[in-house]
Length: 408
Ligand SMILES: [Zn+2]
Image (cartoon, rainbow, N blue to C red; front, side, top):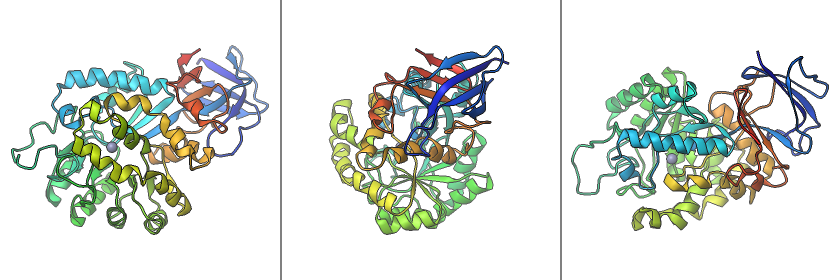
């Protein structure tokens, strides 16, 4: 088995406010075997000296849509699958180049993409997927206009982020089909959304009974429900129904954040997407009404970070970008760093995210037994989170499962 030895590795993984003392890291095959100050290179190992650099676990983005190849989700859902897949391969490669070695897809990706990634057919982050997100008629995945009641035609397309289901029986069936198809968790749209035409932000998506049914189906399969949420009312209701992963949460109150924390839920803020929808959305073909909705949630976003932090609610890293806006993925680090300590911002994309992906100890850590998903950074991101931006410019090395994806 080939082995690699990383010498003088100062580790930044979000568990401490300063980089670690220099460590030796032994990698054998796809996993890390040893991490210790006195570790020695095994015979025949390739030795890489990381003096002056920082070693991090590969980054994890917990809210992406890898099939959102266009900014307009309505148009995205009409594209041929082959075109969506080809463009998605490019998006995935770019994510990996930014240091994201795992992404959690919360609507759209299918199991064929997971298998293609596992077969190593193209450079890509590991994929943890929900399959199609579940939405009610008139909900966040319903792109039909107000007077269009034709049955939704494109819900099975690769470019569709979600599928429509109404009533407990249909919700159960949709959840079961997604799990059967390889979903690792279930995503539901439980609040209004920006990109959909007939659901203002304050709308509650699904009845309590429908949400509870989705939670039961997820639990039956040993997993959890993630929900698209903005308002305190929607968030409280979702948590009461047993939802675990709370996406966006821009309008959350401290009281609801505390309640969610008590129940062990995890929030996934996605602030960068509102910034970019506001500045670039209209030029990319998103309707003016949708752009106008953005400010309903964008302006409250920064305060939401502080409220969730004060309440002790765990936060994972997420971005939720669409089409050409994907290039801003790493700017979420800098946005959060304006109000949160860098250590907590990094933790969101390492061990907190790993747990939400149900891969704790496997990814998001530099420790014996973990997968060797690693990035090397020129400088200390605890002092300057912008080192994680720039399309991987400050990352001379990226490794996934013990294989170099980049070695500058
Ligand atoms: Zn999303």
